[in-house]
Length: 113
Length: 112
Image (cartoon, rainbow over all chains, first blue to last red; front, side, top):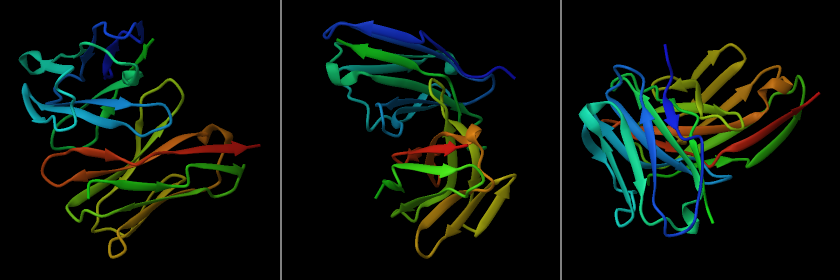
């Protein structure tokens, strides 16, 4: 089966600019996650969707980050405006829902300069 | 209460040795404990997982030991190989919402 697709793979932007990341989960997976992984740390959950509804966005900095999951399939994560500390790998993952195994994409490495 | 503490931060083991990575948690509502393996430039991939009603689980060379009373679990890699060199993350899932909380990671290096 095809894995979780993310794009772009790399992005370099200046601070205060905006950026968007895209994720296409595994077909049929109801749960979609966005994680932020700062270099040398474990992934930190930003937002979790069940179909197109938000389950948990408690750690999403809502003043600058937003995410949506259109029609319960693809998802986009946006940062506006970006800060230097947003430099990280942004990982998208999906799971069937009840199965609990989350499959991760390769991530988007964001560098804010 | 949502934290998962992982140690050591890095580990170097000779080929054939048995690296052990330890994790501890506080929240007794966690009910699923997966381990993820991450190679540079890749996303984490599920390696093995355990539920708290089981004290040990083996899959190939990978074993999870689980101590429910101590709220600790560990990963053992038997007959370690250089190809096992990667970063390993323990994680815990909260009963009911499938939220994955990761540990801080262990960078494992297996030297020939």
